[in-house]
Amino acid sequence: MPDILKDYFEALERLKKGKPTNVPKGTRITNDSVSLEAGRKKGTIKKSRPIFSDLIEAIDAAAKAEAKHRDDMRERLDEAKAEAARYRALWEEALAREVSLLKQLWDEREAWVKERAALTGGKVTPISKTGRM
Image 1 (cartoon, rainbow, N blue to C red):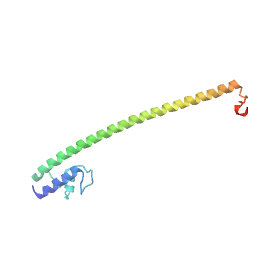
Image 2: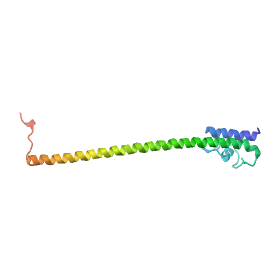
Image 3: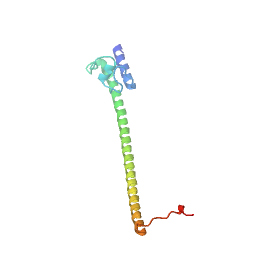
Image 4: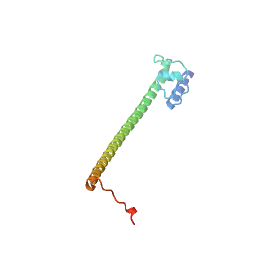
């Protein structure tokens, strides 16, 4: 294997491991990103050059594996978002029940105050037992 290909394959391995040195971490694996990681210019890996055929196959395989991993991560993220939305809906339903119960309690208290006022005539003052002995 020529030295030039060795640099490209090492760059591809660094990108696969997620530890690039010349491109930002998380860069998608493409022919151009491998070129840049290897310290070359963008577009140096061309399909028309037979020397790069094995490298291009390796890059394509790595890109497919990376895409599958990203799809798996996207699926997990979507599942987590759906679960969070479900729990938020449950929480909002619980809050609605609590508010409804508080309103019912308030209405019952108001009705009790009116009933008590009607029974006592509204002018009766309660006698405290603490003042008597």
